[in-house]
Image 1: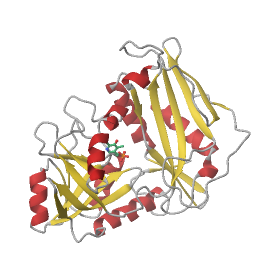
Image 2: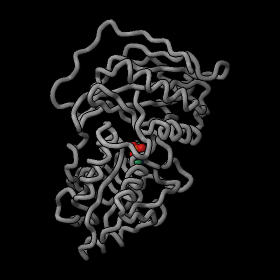
Image 3: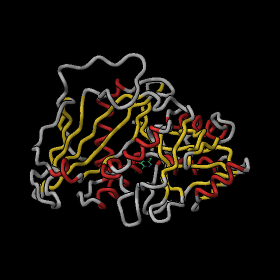
Image 4: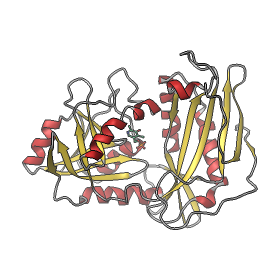
Amino acid sequence: MMEISITKTDKPQEKPQGVLGFGRIFTDHMFLMDYNEEKGWHDARIVPYGNLEFSPASAVLHYGQETFEGMKAYGSGGKCYLFRPDMNAKRSNLSNVRVSIPQFPEDDYIQAVKTLVKLDADWIPEGDDSSLYIRPFFIANDPFLGVAISKTYLFAIILCPAGAYFGSLAPVGIRVEDEYVRAVRGGTGRAKTGGNYAASMAALARAQAEGCAQAMWLDGVERKYIEEVGTMNIFFKINGKIVTPALSESILSGVTRDSIITLCKDFNLTVEERPITIDELIAAAESGELEEIFGTGTAVVISPVNKLRYKGRDIMVGNGDTGETSRKLYDTLTAIQRGKAEDKFGWRMEI
Ligand SMILES: *Cc1c(COP(=O)(O)O)cnc(C)c1O
């Protein structure tokens, strides 16, 4: 076990009332830990939530050497659960390898998350669409403007109470982006690193300008194969079968994606993980075989899509409402996450 020093706040904040939204309210405490070459990871501590102080020359601010994770704690009936935190700890290290951030012991990662969430457990909102969002992140912190692998790092975890992300299960429109790309083979698409998101904003702006909520990403070489949507993995229900792009170097391996595939198989649905082209998708929509599209990710769980906008044209998906499979998957997964359904895959961790 790692030793974590705890300094509690003497000014606990008022808990928010009413609609929570996402990502703007933070709890009373945060976890911090430093890295340098002599000591490795050291000085694990929980302190009152507040601003960080570092040099304007700090490496992360200029060259973006950083990674992050997103996970949630769920409360119900006085109990509190994490969902598959081992997957996040492991993926965090895969991301860190790609951007040359030192590895972090996975047991210590989970211990840090658990200790912080327990301390701020009274911030976990009750309610079926609410949860406590957990954001662990690593940043390169050398005060040096040369392009170099940083020798010092900060690992931090912050928490925010969250309501439904887009409004749960409200269907959205997405715009197929056929010029900008998110990731390429050999690039950083499989890592959760900030630069990927910086590079995605221009496509988001275009999508929003055309009345859509997110951009759908095509592959970086042929602009043909579908990869992801916004910051989510993507699924299609075509003629009764579930199709999702096979994982590759340019697709982020979502914990929700993995869980949804398992649940679909458990529902006896056929799941195909394979390359799928935008042409196949449009043809399926036009022939009436495209029944549902949904994105998956920790923040949203399931985000149904009712409209595709491609080359200036709108294509309706299904009948425009949230599909039955989207709803069933959402209900099943959120019930498991909150301890309201049997956990037959061993995904929950009570803390
Ligand atoms: C985080 C993320 C996802 C979803 O991953 P989950 O583990 O399901 O939250 C999908 N795509 C991208 C690009 C992401 O950053």
